[in-house]
Length: 393
Image 1 (cartoon, rainbow, N blue to C red):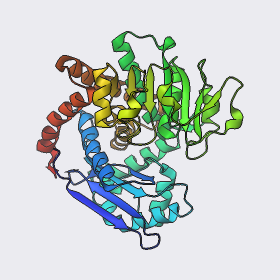
Image 2 (image 1 turned 60 degrees about the vertical axis):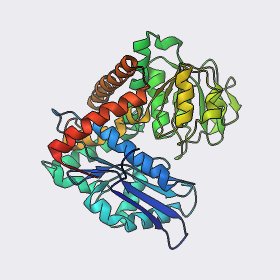
Image 3 (image 1 turned 60 degrees about the horizontal axis):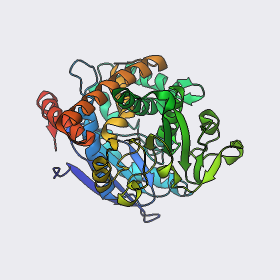
Image 4 (image 1 turned 90 degrees about the vertical axis):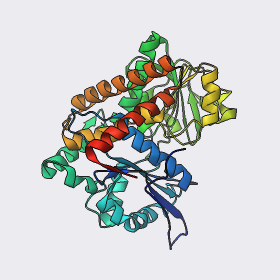
């Protein structure tokens, strides 16, 4: 049983009655890191699990030779549909309510349902300098670091921002590492994704460009499928701000199927890149894929993962697979990488491949799941970080 978080609070909006949550799992050097999500039904329990996951992600990327110093883990969540007309006002009021934490210890940014642009705009309206201002005192040269991060956020690659792409680059590299270990060629490997937002869209692009075939993509309107492969680039540029695809761009061979059809797609790799708790015991029975890469946070429930593991399906866990976005922020801010796409992608690929190799080798040697192996690696690194930098729960 994980230790209780350092801080757990629930805020009720006096305008709408909706609730928001903030959980700080731990602090390192007085600071923690974790995004802010907005979705209908978001709970304190969910945010608590996500905050714990952030502590693990930070620990997994600890490199004693790097400038980036791992932070503690945290998470924020607001119970509201991001498409609700009242969502933005609610976001601003939430950030005003938790402003003391953002100013002093909690660095945050985009997560499910929110873009970084929206978080930045709301943070400014709430009177904050930045959503990551709590980390500024840890920087050697704050002015240069902030300029470097701003420059990095201004970089676009083929019409998509670098900040959107690095996370998907990390997910894709996780998949490619697993395929390489198994000796499976990219050209004959099919992929189905749930979600074509920031993480899912970037993942689809990198996997398609690596030679894999994306055969199914699900959004809130349903699943788009084509056994011969979808035109990923066309779908990416036909998305709205929430990752919903304009169906007018579909080709004659593209089919529209129910929203859950992606689960049973004939594919070797599934990428849940949308909501938490997407795959339970019932859903896992429909899956024929060999690998599941958790681009979303907590998409596979524990009982489902046990059943999948028993029948030889490998779940590449979220604490590893989707950790690239968070790490890139800090690699850039602390100065391990510059505001350059090629440098960012190369560093992300190298770091993610080393981490996935470590986790899969450890799982294989110990006869455990990759998640158990990742948690074991993090459990070894957390005390080292605490001893070097100080840590508080």
